[in-house]
Amino acid sequence: MSDYKTISATQIADDVREGRGSAVDFTSKALKLAATEGRELNAFITLCEEKALRQAAAIDQMSPELRAKLPLAGVPIALKDNISYTDYPMTCGSHILDGYIPPFDATVVTRLIEAGAVIIGKTNMDEFAMGSSNENSYFGPVKNPVDRSRAPGGSSGGSAAVVAQGIVPLSLGSETGGSVRQPAAFCGLFGLKPTYGAVSRFGLTAFASSTDQISPFARSAEDLALLYRVVAGWDENDSTSVAYDHPDYASVLELDRKLKIGLPKEYFAEGIDADVAATIDRARQALESAGHTISDVSLPLTNKAIPTYYVIASAEASANLARFDGVRYGLRESNDRSLEAMYSDTRESGFGPEVKRRIMLGTYALSSGYYDAYYNKASQVRELMRQEFEQSFKSVDLLLSPTSPTPAFKLGEKIDDPLAMYLSDVYTAPASLAGVPAISIPYGESSDGLPIGVQCIAASFGESLLFQIANHLVPRA
Image (tube, rainbow, N blue to C red; front, side):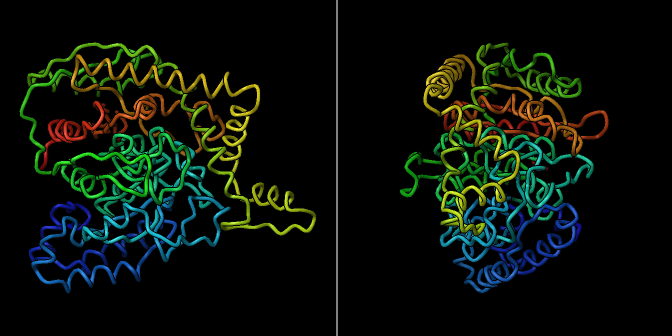
């Protein structure tokens, strides 16, 4: 079992394709760990045991010729519980979706199954992906595998925890303002936020549609690249999907040129943890020693990212979550007084405090007389921010920064201070608003042994360069 917990997705797929290993065996090991260690971490909401074993058995029974065509043959994988998967509940971490079972697969799920991956379960998350610590889940908080007194990050904390614990080598989360990169940093993983439109959102429950992204976790740059290539690509079911000729990212991981790398000075302001700052400095020195050029750049609108993000995200959440009213999905609180009272009682009972807070903020920002002052103004700032990034990539290939201002904080430390929690996204929100790709790379530890991640940001569709720099900083074993 210890060997399974450290084996890479690439090795599992090679073993299954070449007949050295069994998909059923790997799946059984993952399910056993999910039911024991996953339960201890509170990382799963649903296990898909019956279907997973059927999928694995079907792979083992394929001809060698067919198995050879599966890039993820027999690889166990977990999905964040806001991604649609038929036959099993999708809760989005909320009481309001009690009893809801999706009638269709998300596009990424279809692509995973076609590639030979085996989906073993749905992971715990902040309710409707709203949070930075995974403490907003109706099902309770997820524990960080590195230190169980600490948060795993959010909102994709469950998907991060199951990879960090070795239950599965790969998982999918979702990003809106940092919900994969920040948990990756807290749990010592690689986490990618793709270019907006590179991965289909069809089957992802919407939070903030203009920044939502399905995003992968892995323990190596190679595995991350392998998973990303499977799920990326144009989808006719998603109007925001972009047609792009994605390469085989895992086969071009070697960095064959010297880069110009920018350090955004605004990302190193007051509030950054000393260990995080020291880690970024070590990464800078390593890159300079390897012959890359490091220079300071300026992104003056960085300090507007958090208010801009929370106005836009809350406004879009207010519109998207209007569909959860007790009529069409999940929970319904019976009320004989009126239809309006049934709506109100269902939403009052079904939504948690953070979701209610953001719905109220978003509704206010979109209300008559305030739209221009808040949502419209935030949209204008967002466009200027996008232009800032575009301009910076005329002089540098990549931007290097912290992923999070601190290592993983204690569970309960920030739950009663929403503003402090929101500031956890200060380094991740800008790339989300601009729609450019960014990666969190595990790079050392704090003085008390907590993982620290460094972030690299590239121009649109610069994922190949992000995988290369990640592999360059943390080479394959």
